[in-house]
Length: 251
Image (cartoon, rainbow, N blue to C red; front, side, top):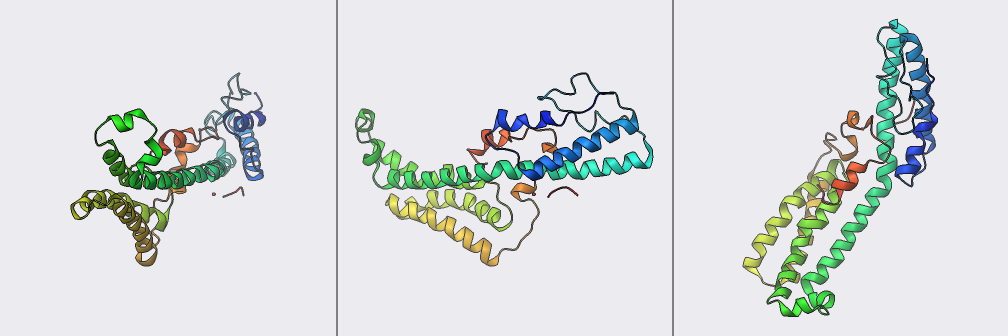
């Protein structure tokens, strides 16, 4: 029987992301390595020849040939718990810095959109197309206050917040397009409409935190753990989808 090498798990951190594995992840990987070896021995599993391949580390399924009695069942229970813990911990390590990127993106978008809504000449006045196309300044000022719904709120939602903040951003995601559609009927002042969107987002947070309650149900980091168990440490799906918006240890 081949012996599982725990080291192949670690290069994934350096190949796919700049984050180094912290101690909790290393401990969980070591525990899984030991438990999978025990399970493979108890069940007589035949492991593939490339079991030391760093890009395709062995899974619990490959190490479980079935049977093994109560001792094997106890190991399976431990493996399930530690795999869930590891999936959450990988998410935690990765999303810590990614959430900051999304937050920075939201703040940058906020500043950019304010200038677009109030003084687009400052950004685009030096471009020939800006002065050549009729009403381009009006189009950009309108886009400036729509930026709340298109980029700012989605960037905040991409952080996958949970509980009250998730509720606040859900309200803001519905409220900002409504205010952007209705406000031009009342005023043509795009700066005022931009601040109206800001008020909607701030009001959504205030409403959620003052009268909301913690459901705790479908928070951002509490997603389906099973989807992450066979994924690399860098949650690459979040990078591809996050820009448009849409933690426990071992025993």
